[in-house]
Amino acid sequence: MSRKLIVSADDYGLSSGYDLGVVRAFREGVATVLALIVNTSESPRAVELRNKQCPEAPLSLHLNLCMGKPVSKPEEIPSLVDEEGLLCRSPMWSAEASGDAKCRGKLNPSYDDILAETHAQIDRFIELTGESPNRIESHSVVTPNVMRALAEVGEELGIHTEAIKGGGSASMRSCGECMPRGGNAERRRMTARGCTPEDWECDAFGIQSCPYEIAILHFHPGYVDQGVVDRSTLVLARCRDLETLTDARVRSWIDRNGISLVDYSEIYISAA
Image 1 (spheres, rainbow, N blue to C red):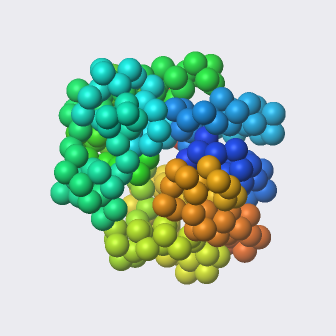
Image 2 (image 1 turned 90 degrees about the vertical axis):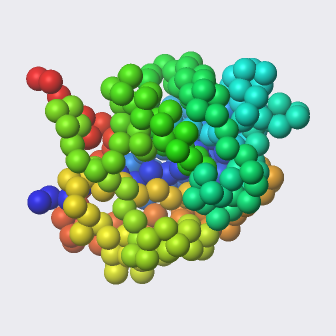
């Protein structure tokens, strides 16, 4: 089976400096999708940068439920926001609910609030880009309520979301997120240090053994500026991801193994 690979450059819109690196990862590297955060002050500039530098770059919606101002009015989503009306940061979320080691609190936002903010961010995505997202994944935190909301939105709008696992359907080809050997623990470690060309050359992500027609990988390729430092605990690993995704050895490995780089549009099966 011919392998197809989606390489997502996550957190696009995080900061002006970081976004420059994301664009480079697309123009000079192997990134195939820019995953857009829509609720930061940089989000409109990120869309403008994409339109000027790489208008052909597809955008997905990187649903952000744990950083900055929500798109919804804070009083409409009380379980998601703090006393200042800002989205509660990931350390405040419950590790039991999210399964994420960086979540150390007791917060488990309600399904209704998550669904409301998800719809609000979809509307903002359309407002910023003039197009509807064909893929949604959650930034940083995932709980059963997040997955339930993504599943409902995906079914309602007929789009692929993080909640859709594995096999295909009448409208979508089979696809799945690649997990490094060692599972979630290794994925967290690799995310924290950034990926290397050697990770690709030994197929640490399991691309070749992925059981689905389309494999999906997520990275954080970009430059570090004060916006990154202020908003994220993931800092220097972003620089390593950028240098790796633009390294000729990675492109060479992909080509040698007959892997086709695609975006999320490849998932959809044309009715025609």
